[in-house]
Amino acid sequence: MNMRRFFAFFVSLTLVLGICAQSKQSVQWRYIENYKDMAIDQMRRYHIPASITLAQGLIESGSGQGRLARQAHNHFGIKVGGTWKGPYIVMADDRPDDRFRKYRTDDESYEDHSRFLVNGQRYRSLFNLKITDYKGWAYGLKRAGYATNPRYAEMLIGVIERYNLQQFDSYNRGRYHARAKTPEETRAENSFFAQHIVYKVNKSYMVIAASGDSWERIARETGVSVRKLLRYNERPRGSSLQIGDIVYLEKKRSKGDKSLKGVPHTVQPGESLYDIAQHYGIRLAALYKLNALPADYTPQVGDLIWLR
Image (cartoon, rainbow, N blue to C red; front, side, top):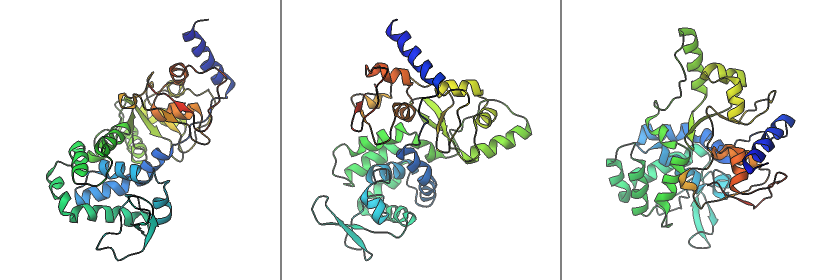
């Protein structure tokens, strides 16, 4: 049996046996889902691209998992500064006793981040850029000294493009419409897409399952058959759909996005290879092949998984 047939056989076997792990919504997707509306609201009021706000939040807060976000609702790593009169927490950064602003809520952090940029003289020129010019904003923030990392602009751009965050800068664009509909179907579709953001991951469209979703509902509203949805997502017949599951609406790719070249994924606690495949929009069999993994491989925390 050649390698291609082996991997096809292995994936088919896992699907038939129903042992392919259920997809889990990663902390990154969960962060985007939770805070996209805040970022869009800030964009409408302060003319800061929502993509930039979300990307900075993802990076600076560790997708909401960092100490600053958890203990201080500080999503952007903003330090006390000369005008801050509120509470703070002490954490090592440039110095061992740096003081960071502490907020009562996440909304306060997002609001203060916008005001920090609007009122900062060094960021003034950024507001002359188009709202859709996320690359200009990324390089401008780096030049203005928002972060000391020399690759900060590239990091922002990479996060924005990997998660298709730029769609939020022109919020009414980028919806996925599969077919023409009757008025009744159009109303149902509008309800579905009011509840779902369509992301583009590794050139493939996907949604994140919400309350009340099923394979049948997603098939009905997108025009992609249940059979194809199950095949695209490498799921067996009869598998249930859970809130937070990643659901691809078209076939995944055989390797990761170009931005992932030379950048492996580090396995996190509770993460399966299927979770990683769904997160990056890569077919499971391709992930096995890219990493020359045996059929009985079980991911261990800290393992490096190559994506391209």
